[in-house]
Length: 504
Image 1 (cartoon, one colour):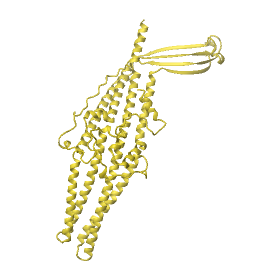
Image 2 (cartoon, rainbow, N blue to C red; image 1 turned 135 degrees about the vertical axis):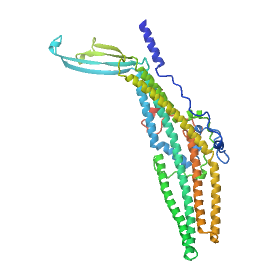
Image 3 (cartoon, rainbow, N blue to C red; image 1 turned 60 degrees about the horizontal axis):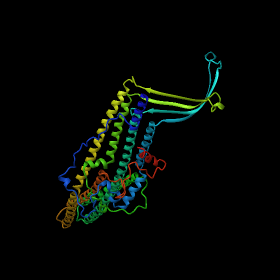
Image 4 (cartoon, one colour; image 1 turned 90 degrees about the horizontal axis):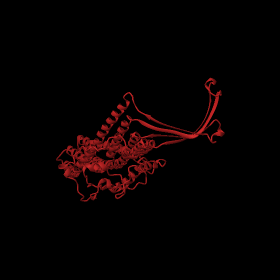
């Protein structure tokens, strides 16, 4: 009766999948309950003259709906297929899936077929039959099973599963980040194109001014000082043009690296920077929403769960390890007699191993597991704080760029009028050419500042879209893919992730 009770307890432990891991409780978010308000945070742009998000969260807005530039859409699609960093993250996920299946297999018995032949010599004075040579052939099955009474293997399986799910979230974060990186790099290209156009216009005006002052100097009605001052504007613009050409080439190289192939020649025509028309009114929601929108936070929590499970494995190491091994087959001194009646052979060898003295190894492993869990708690909390800050920074920027750009537009218009008046006064002999030079330089800087601010506004909207969890789905209304969804490249190993996902 006692034997049957022990078996029943063992079966109950195994069926319940009990472990010695601590009960997991999600750490409280170390951030405020709401995003900052007041001041710049209350100056969020409306939808006048712009497309509206219609109250949809960023995670529910497809990237093809957030970006309207078909050229950018095509670049993002190419990058999602070709980017090598994204491929590495997918392969890491698939490797973790394989590791999970390896550890999970430890919960099941192993069964091996074995065949052997042994020929040995024994000294005559050690034999009972006087035969010094003997031969033994065997064919059979060997089985072994560690009965996981204290959940050691179960804890290791839980750790491997959490690690795998964490790498799946890391893959998702990498894909969302890639969408944002391609968009921001594309915006950088547009900014450089606009700056190049401003510099070319400034250079054309400067060359005309230089031509006029040179004619005046050659005719004796102008001074060399005016001529050299006009020349400085021309050469400064020439130098800036070369700098921008270099930056433009490097920006294109960076974009090529992101998409993983040379820029295709059949890309759709791109839109000017002023026609990008990104969604500006995506609601921020509450900080708690980030826990389900941000894959980097979910990755950090999975790593925390893995560390929690590892404590269970470290605790189980203090308890007995129960294993069952056995074999069944046939033994015979000849090959022909292997399967004859009476040749059956079997063995059954249960074993219990109880640690008595390990030199402090088990204690050290448990201490290490507890420390690693505390480390993962800090990492998880930092991920939440980082996400909170990124969203808050994006909201602060979104609330100021429109007013900044409006002020810069007025400043640029004023500088243009100042240059026109300075030219008029110089031609009438009222002011020196230094006044014109100063006005030209001021207008050039105002135009460059305006281009930069406009592009920073677009890049901030892209970054805020990413910070709020946007970029995972392609079209608004699509069913979000699981983080470990298979991909359409790397055909040989794509199904690995799917099989592991359904196994958990």
